[in-house]
Length: 445
Ligand SMILES: *Cc1c(COP(=O)(O)O)cnc(C)c1O
Image (cartoon, rainbow, N blue to C red; front, side, top):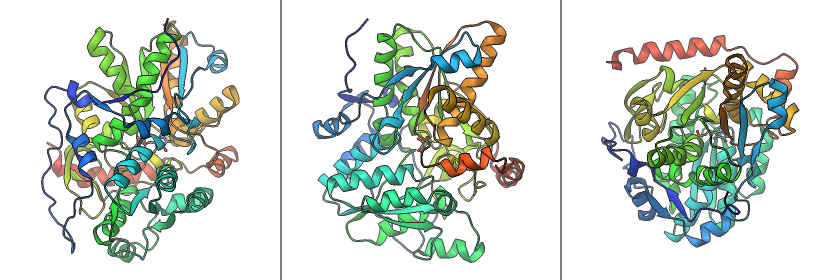
């Protein structure tokens, strides 16, 4: 047994433990549009993104911010276990406890700190469901930075309270695609009803970052440094599980681009390297955006117009616009290069689930545990429930830990749709995916 769990002093860099992975191997952009490419990362963050050191010290000022809400609770879901009548032991790490309501603040405060130190005036970004935009708007408020957020249009319309929250924090919020950028205008010219996507919002944010004086682009997920910042989650979880006298056989997290999955799972990967005791690491993605389970491992851009450099990753193609499902934070066409590499090497698992199963799981969890999960987090819960039911059938009492990446208090309109039987079916989404895969077929080898 150990004493109280502290906020980690270092971030854990999994790249150090991945023999064979080449960090940051990127080809130059095929197309740079009408803008020259201006570097977006301060040297401090760039160094983290290419580092091979296993541990990188968290600056004391950032750690002091973390201490406002960390360590987050790690809770055993006793009532859910009883409800499912399962021998499985189910635990969740509660990132919903952060002031922004999700894990995203872990990287937002770190990035705002480094950009401020580098003399930047403001940050621009793209956001899906609005969780990243909310976190960044809070971090920018804390460090006196301007904040501009391009919010995917379907989420902007589904979740108006997210916009209000960001504006309350002083951010400027625009629905994407918008008429304020060339990227947005060109996409709207082709499809005036485009629901938007994270890759479109990124194209718009990158354009502003190329042109605005003292304005830089800040990424909410996918890049190595963002994954790194999130590892405070898993490091705490390792210590908290030990304090509870248990250890997870399986760790589950939803996957948008990979930061919350990496955040909870990588420290358990590290433990498996040290102790030889394996933990199954499962990423859960939406059936409407199945980059790992159905995408192609290839070089691709991060934004819709192809103005960003390319990374080797599992992708559905940077021009793919997923159906407007309610888990907006998971509507990204690609998986983080590190996560993609680990999946390719068979070091992690992935499953894809449809949204009605996901909302059913979210409601089951809420009624059992009195905590409403974000639709993104409910993806992880749906897979945990699948496993717990299987454990009931096989009698195998596995220990399962999942990341409750955020709460769903801003997603009540989506829950309302589910409860009143108005949730969109997955079949239209399936057709969009088939079309995207057919387009990528020549790239598959
Ligand atoms: C953004 C988000 C996710 C998924 O994002 P990653 O890119 O995989 O980190 C999951 N849950 C919540 C609540 C989110 O806001």
